Length: 178
Ligand SMILES: CC(C)(COP(=O)(O)OP(=O)(O)OC[C@H]1O[C@@H](n2cnc3c(N)ncnc32)[C@H](O)[C@@H]1OP(=O)(O)O)[C@@H](O)C(=O)NCCC(=O)NCCS
Image (cartoon, rainbow, N blue to C red; front, top):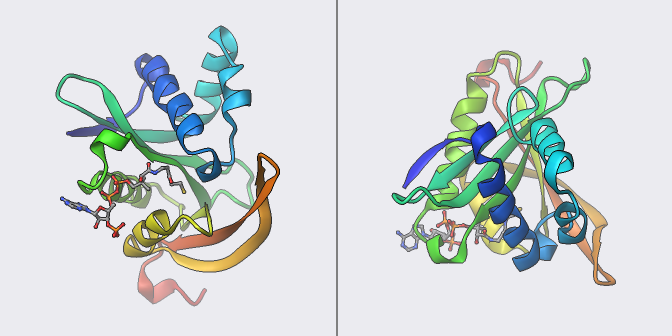
């Protein structure tokens, strides 16, 4: 399995995986299949550029030897002057056929490694539905800590889901009190 950042040429492979993910795991993501699948052609490319590729952020993809995209992990940068030190981990997904081989752990580790090289980036935040125990274990193992819970953060098919809010401090330990 090869891991690399997605580029412009990966737009439609990403779209296939992303729409599969939104349909397969509707409660795992804040975005909805209905809204993302409605973005086609130029609207989708505009969305891809604004969300998925640099400089907006990046998505690391896991590719099989035949070139098919089977997993993703994204980092989205905050543009605001007062929030540029924070980024959002999002879009963590591994196709069912590739699960339980450590791929999500590798993807999250690759995002964190790339994030550590970004000057001024101090913190990665994420939100995860409170009942998604597999994903929570994965984030805890990567060093994220839970700092809160948003009640009824998502409503899917009429059912409300709470979300755990988690954060990873990227600063060296000696400066953490500032
Ligand atoms: C959550 C998700 C990304 C995990 O992907 P994954 O690639 O299976 O994750 P990993 O393989 O790194 O870890 C999963 C488990 O497999 C275990 N594992 C890792 N390598 C293994 C191996 N070689 N053999 C057996 N098990 C293994 C891990 O220890 C882990 O076990 P745990 O859940 O008991 O801690 C995937 O299930 C998914 O896409 N789910 C739907 C979308 C989702 O929930 N995304 C998160 C949104 S916040």
